[in-house]
Image (cartoon, rainbow, N blue to C red; front, side):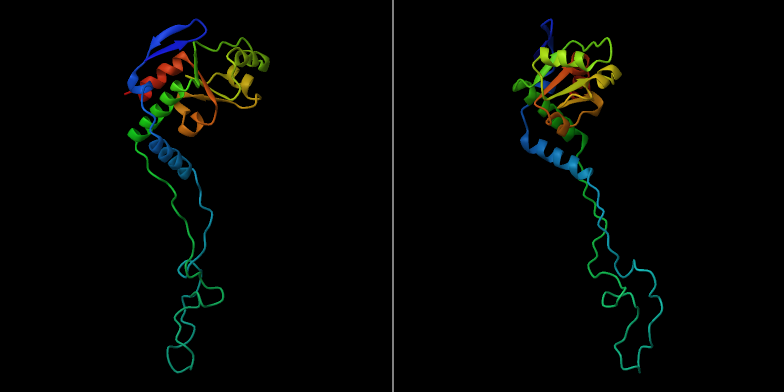
Length: 202
């Protein structure tokens, strides 16, 4: 697959196995759902009769009192006892294997390329930390809601773009499906494009 690298219109050939994959909607949905499920935490917790402290002593003898037999004061029918069907820690995680994740990432990137939502450039060279300079670059390529993808963290780039609305920054190592689909376009540098192919194209 041939991709145009701006601003010099350099043509580079990339693997169809990585950038020419059909969009697998069901798989992408499954991966994104698992991503959010794995990040979910369960704070709901109640104690059942075995979790409540105390109640080890039999409250009265088994026979002869005229009362119903009882072995503990921590049963659900007692004040201060446990909850009958206590809600406890629940595991919301959903397992997605590496192969499924890789295919989902390739599928998303391929679809973004097909729909002209990816702008590939040679590099982003900022001489100093200036939001104004970052605005110029975004205006040059007509980018508003955009995720900037680099090969490694660039402090100048991060500090120059952090106050701009609807602009995100990520390295290839920290890309994930929800992040890629959260912006209208992706601005990716050439080195990051090659790193993406190396990581997910195999």
